[in-house]
Length: 309
Image (tube, rainbow, N blue to C red; front, side):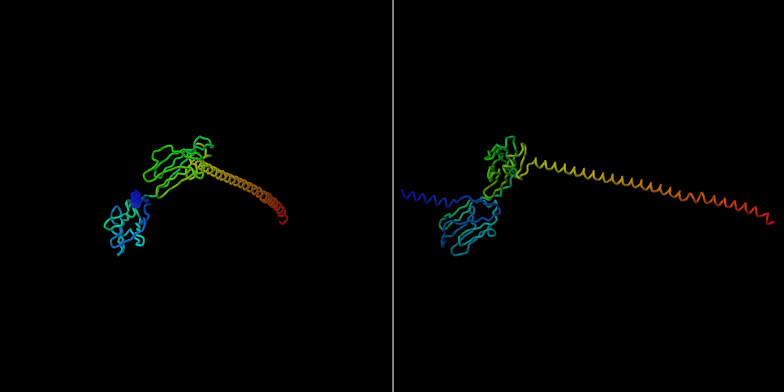
């Protein structure tokens, strides 16, 4: 009975070692395949690495390792521990990899079920404020991937989140989850090789006005709209002030020009008056005096002529 139990235990251990486990790899990363346990090669025992039962490489006791086509340019082997590295794995490299110790029979030393995945896409987190009080802080939370392949809607408070819809929540390769952690609402998109997160502080969500939509960049859309309106009003005020200033400057210039014209007119009138005052004595008085003097001389001469005869 004891011998049967030991035999069954040995069979289970050997089966688990051969079966191995799933190994998830991100596309473009190098895949390292190790052999578990000790391996002794002899003239009758060789070690093979196989992909879906197709030979990739061989280790022998009396020769150098061999890499088979089409892996010569992509694979690298290490004789000291019989490991193999497959470079730049792609989706087509997903499958079963085995290290097989071969002689008259084959014994699988280790097996890997490799699955190559893409990195997950980023996510968008949107929180819509409801009419509930700030004390309850119940908010509708929508989390979706940027390619919209997965979308989840939750109702969250200060402590927990509960999912509203169950459709389109997961795919075969990734999952989307929303939860509360470190006083933040967090949307997490992940698979076995990568993850992306977006978060919003609970404090900014709980005190938001009803109807406010807040995105993961931390700025409510209503606040953005208010800022835009305020900016437009400010621009209008500045334009109005500039226009008024220009009108005031133009009015000042016009008044100055009018005053200058009035001053010039006054100067011209004053000059004309002075000119008449200076010219008048010469034209009116002097000629009359000369005429009188000439008449006196004529009379005098007429009186003197008879005496000379």
